Amino acid sequence: MILIVEQSQSGIIPGRFLPPHSPAKMRIFCGGIMLRTFIRTELILLALALPLLAKDSPSDPRLKNSFRRPEENGWTFVHLEGKPAEIGFQNGYWLSAEIEDMLKVTEFEQIHETKKDWQFFRDAARTVMWPHIEQEYREELQGIVDGANARGVKIDIWDAVALNASMEWEYYVKEYNQEHGIQSAASLVAPEHCSAFVATGSFTKDGKIVIAHNNWTNYMDGARWTIIYDIVPDKGYRMLMDGLPGLIHSADDFVVNAAGIVITETTIGHFFGYDPSGIPEFVRARKAAQYAASIDDFAHIMKEGNNGGYANNWLLADIKTNEIASLELGLKNVTLERTKDGYFVGSNFPVNEKLIREETDFDPKDMSLSANARHVRWEQLMAENKGKIDVAAAQRFLADHYDTYSKKEEPGERTLDGHIDLSPRGSQPWMPPYGNGGAVQNKATDTTMAARMSFTAAAGHACGMNFKAAEHIQEHPQFAWEEGVLRNMDAHPWTTFSIAK
Image 1 (cartoon, rainbow, N blue to C red):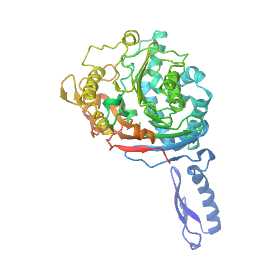
Image 2 (image 1 turned 30 degrees about the vertical axis):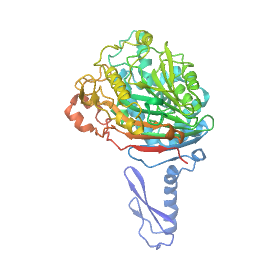
Image 3 (image 1 turned 60 degrees about the vertical axis):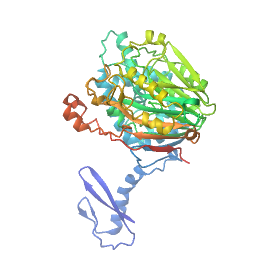
């Protein structure tokens, strides 16, 4: 069998195979030169073809049992399995193109937001993060680098660590600037990521757990937050989670593990404080998802070595006991509440009064703030739907457009389905008026689904509204700097994902 190839200015292009009994006088071209000797042609073309075929051949033993499925309703499902280095290699290999793209986007965003160059974050990854990353996750991070390199994507370990730490750089940079007497940009604050709830007992339709979350972020990275990871580590519990390419953790944190623990969170709004001697949040979050068999396990792992990075109000569920919890994890103040009959909601609203005073500049009395307005809406929905909450209701909640401040159906920064891009107010100081951010994807599950390690997810806005990058930039040219990086973000239907059998 031989392979017809062409040569272009960009190099050799593989074509189609010809059967071994093709006429010897067939006109075969390579680089415009007609080769008349069949044997010589076959040898030359085989030599040209082998490197091309090897590059795309998943023959590496580190890829055993792993795979990537075709895109489904905006999501890409990958199954990763094995030892830490193998799981990392599989992540880097199957998502190499997405990792290369995500690294460019992250670099672009961080430079714009923090006014630091990428080398600043690479250096901090090496000197601040790396010393506090345990060996298991060092091996997985190096595996991601090796897998991406195997597909021709040139990244190194400090790029991989900096990418994984992207959710906590705002916290680190603000602390760094303060220590060095540098004035931070007003927009350098803990972003108001996400709306979420967890309910059980008398609040749900069957008395069991329902939990849901939508991810709020900049549309630049949010349109890429579309990976479904099914991870089977050689130690700890299997995990099904959403995430960004090239990460060892979910980052927006919607995880179901094989021990029956379901995890989500929303960030603590207007938070400040960071301990560079602590364990990176992305390491603790991954470790807790992988090893927690109870709410207490999760809380212990997250509190141990807490660095204050990406400070969250974690909403938790244990389907074995029908118990739910809220772990508000500040740097100085930590509160764990739990119940078997009730609910917890998250909208970037700090709960503990002492935490509000000592670790935020949040105003809990200003009902025009996004976090406060959404908190009021969550309370309304929980009361109105008591005894009726199920996954279908959760999906409706995440598409909700009621503004409790204006008392109108009006999508914007104050609605559970966030549309900052439609708001003349923006979400200050995080995002300016008509800023390209808000809810970017959604997940929900219940006890029955979680027992099968399954959840339902919708990429884009749950309300069905599409975001068109070029149209928005044309209407709001102040965001022209995002052109080429900002993508369309179409809304997709709810789709159920489960672990691979």
